Image 1 (tube, rainbow, N blue to C red):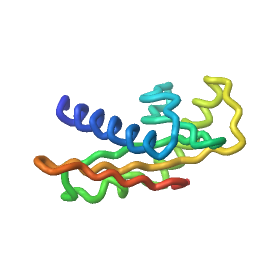
Image 2: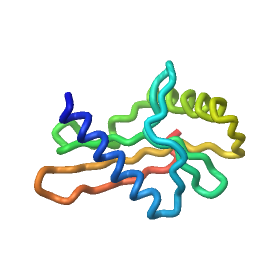
Image 3: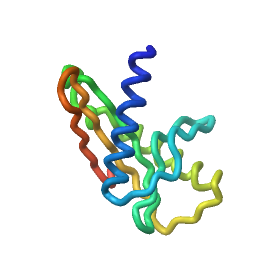
Length: 118
């Protein structure tokens, strides 16, 4: 399990760097509440972004982007509302983004950012 956790942490670090390089500001990482966890919370201008990061070593189980189902997107919306309430943040716009990281052994990782999944 440690290997999987290390891979996930590596993917989240790559995703955070990728999004910062595009002008976003990281507000929180790995925020937890009784309902679950948000990988990254960011600000993209006036928009608060709730971001799910999925990391894979290969495509043998599908693309990392395919791992977020409509049920997971709905859960992320609920978690985003919980984060906003817990931090007393008012935002005109909240967006759910997905970052897929493919990190094959011996090759450079690729990072795909999909804004506004749900």
